[in-house]
Amino acid sequence: MLEEFFLGILGGTLSGITPALHVNTLATLLHDISKADFNFVFLIYIMGLTHTFLDAIPSTFLGIPEEETSLSVLPAHRLVHQGKGLEVINIAITASTLALIFALPLLPLYLKLAPLYKPEFGKLFVLILSLFLILTERGIKKIHALLIFMLSGALGLMVDALPLKEPYFHIFVGLFGVPALIVGMENRKFEVGEGEIEISRWRILKFSFLGTLLGALASLLPTFTSSQAALMGSFLSKDERSFLTIAFSVNTANYFFSMGNFYLTGRTRNGILALIRESYPILSQREFLILIFGSFCAAALVNLYGLALGRGIGKALTGVDYRKLNISILSAVFMLSFYFDGIFGILTLIAAASVGYTAIELGVKRTNCMGVLMLRILIK
Picture (cartoon, one colour):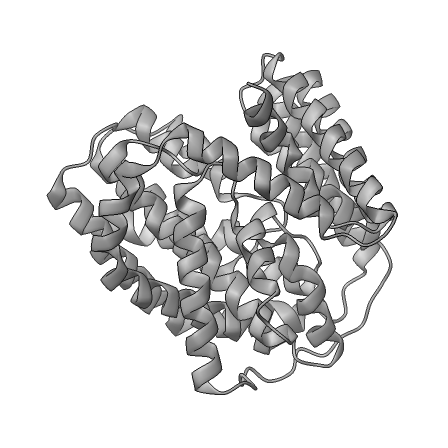
């Protein structure tokens, strides 16, 4: 199992720092060549957790988010332009670590609440959240947000009818990754800066705890994503650093609590757990405790190298031609899309990218693109 632990760290690091390579995609590739046992479960779980610590790197320096990091991009870039890019990476690693620490004592209460969830609660919450996303836009942008919500929702319904093996790859990379790559074609210069976090310890503790609570909520409710939980937290934060602390802690807490939800109820809240359920549908108490212990071991290890890795990548990118880099990444994305689902994958990717890019052009939050999942829940 030690071998699987380090392979998980390696895989999560690779997916975390590689633009547009989601950890679910890498886990799917491993799933096709691995034996369905607990060692595989342990490997991809550690891989997914490690990913949550490091996926801030491409979204900070390249503007290439996944859905989970989409809201953090603009605040992170404001700090990057101030020469504070490495501070963002340090906030991500610190907030993710604190989220695990806060989550552990909350886990017994969470395990009592998780079985109480009923689908009716989820549908009502999705309705409220949908209205919240749209109505928090200003003026005419409410109409634009509704348009994006409905377009992405229609895309989700259409994708359900297509014979796709990896629909979520095309959807989420298209909605959130490809538009950012297109917008980021121009060359930009930035300074990596130092990694010291310029907010008080009390504030980073406070906002990490808030993010942990929101992450727990996100793990209970379907389609209530890390990005949407961070959006709720944004109303309680007054500056970029506080918001980023919430956003990054939400991401890791959501992943950790989702594992607890799966252990107790069998429900899956992310792609990693969906793969685990296919291969290994029931976890024993001993296996659950091993995953918890592995979580803290992984966090400790990432803290040893994560900041240095971010510094090295940031410095390497300071002289990069962004147009050539983004064209290369886009080419790789389209090849992966074709590899998974052929021409239908390419068409789905293009359709999703069109909706995501329209959201950018209209100036509305791309969390409205979560209509791709939410509309389906509301009408079915």
